[in-house]
Amino acid sequence: MSEGVVVGPGVQSDPGTRVSPLAPRAAVVSVRCHALDAIYSTARHLRASGAPGSHHRALFAYDHAGWYVKRVPAAERKYR
Image (cartoon, rainbow, N blue to C red):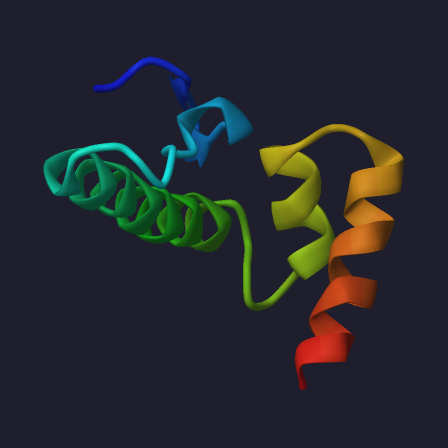
């Protein structure tokens, strides 16, 4: 995996994985693939941790920060 990508319970992309507009196209595709992996990996982790039955429990299993567990549902409501 490229530098800046953290592999844990869910794969999480780090802002350090952003690509310069001057980077070769292969680098851009590589980062997009890591982001796609992160989305599916995180979804699998949340599902295994209790979602959709208990989103709070699943979010807390993903990230133990209380502020994060509160902020994610608020952000989700903006997209609905």
